[in-house]
Image (cartoon, rainbow, N blue to C red):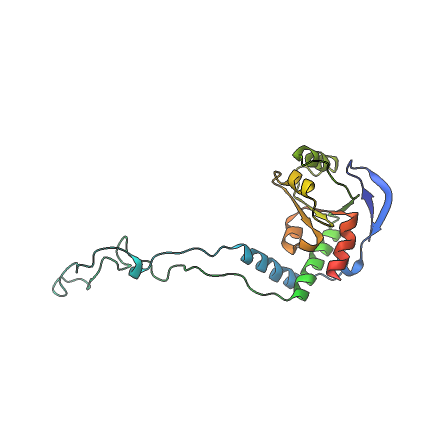
Length: 208
């Protein structure tokens, strides 16, 4: 697939870039995408949830009523889960939700996600650029020139650029990342994927 490179003013240049079919034109694997997104979301979970069980509740240990003769069930403690304010039965405990996924599966998932975006014509290649200072206004103008102001976008850079990252940080619908940190979830979650000239080559290095 061949795309025309666009500058930050939104105008097409005379340059073109060929997207590698081994990355942007494979047979997508939906199960690999599912596993990679599942792992990404699981890794975001803190797992710090906790409820108190009856052994951790501080209440009176006095026996509530006599053992027999009341016509009701036995009750020996206000900590019992059947009483309001008692401990919870089988409540959540702190745990780690992360799990391992093979590198080749993660690579296949990213290739599949990029292939889907290429088929949907959701990929745009920009000239390499930089900002002299971090200004949200500069990045907003960039999106406006590309007619993407109201859409979810992800900008993929060849290497980290502090000014570009800080310029986009306050905008809710956009993400700035590098080719080495690109995730399947972020690609699928965005409406449009913006690649710089340098990042196209970097993605080929990472995924090949």
